[in-house]
Amino acid sequence: MTTILRNALKTALWIIRIIVPVSFVVTLLDFYGIIEWISTYTAPLFHLIGLQGNAAVVYFSSLFLPLYAPIAIIATLPLSLREITILALMCLITHNLPIECAVQRRSGTPFWQTLVLRLTFSILGGFLLNLVLPESLSLTTQTETLTATTSQPSTLNSQLLNWLTNTASLCIKIILIITALMYGQFLLKRYGIINKIARPLAPLMRLCGLHPNSAFLWLVAQIVGLTYGAGIMAQEIEESGADREELHRINLHICVNHSLIEDTAIFCMLGVAWYFLIIPRLIFAILIVNTYNIISARHKKSMSPTNH
Image (cartoon, rainbow, N blue to C red; front, side, top):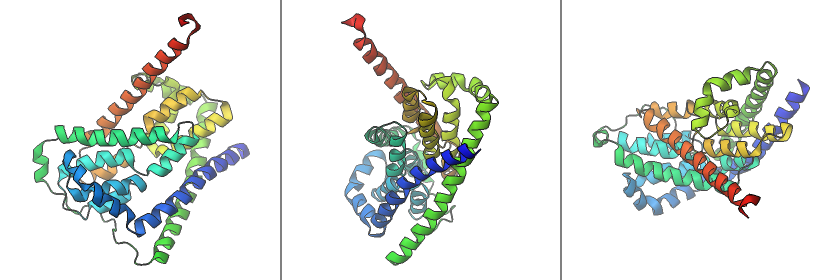
């Protein structure tokens, strides 16, 4: 038990060391209006994917902040359900990029890879949804179904105090969740339950281009999110020398497809249909990993001594 607690604290602390400085910088960018300023110059591009120009501030907020920030902004804009659906898919893929890409880098996948993948498939997802979504959704305007506050603190001190309170709460949450996950993982391994979990998920794992043994880590990322999932993966690398190639595949999958339950439910509260948010992300993840597997196999074949 002592070893589990020590490893959990170690893993939680390196996640916190990423989150604290990055979230502090983003807080300053948000307070001084830099995120909104960037959005004004990119607004014309959003017309190409069926969005109003003011939707740009929602998307760019999602790049730097957790999902609740763009959702709070959505609640203040006169957007149609069609526009919210497009934005929801885009934000689900790209939210909180600096922190989540940094965490995935620590668990074995280069920062630039996850960054490029998430940005590319976010824009692609918005473009494709704009092509297939029925125009009838444009007639439905979102109502104020969320009570999230969007008022910004009037002074820098109040903004920083708000950041400090939220960050402290988040750090405690990270320590508790990572400890619970590691203890749960220990029990599942000890009693052979992981294999029982993997068995029914094996067909899905194979479809996704992943090994059936990846089922537990995949479930962690889908239930509690990418940050915690990548944290457990990093510990797996350090403790058991897990197959780095397989963990890289999982990282590629979860960078565009994670937290299927909680994050999807948040946007469903705004009236967005779940299948427009889950199916595209799952398809993108399957496409990414299987493409990687094909390229990797061809590369290994070309490097084989028999081909020289």
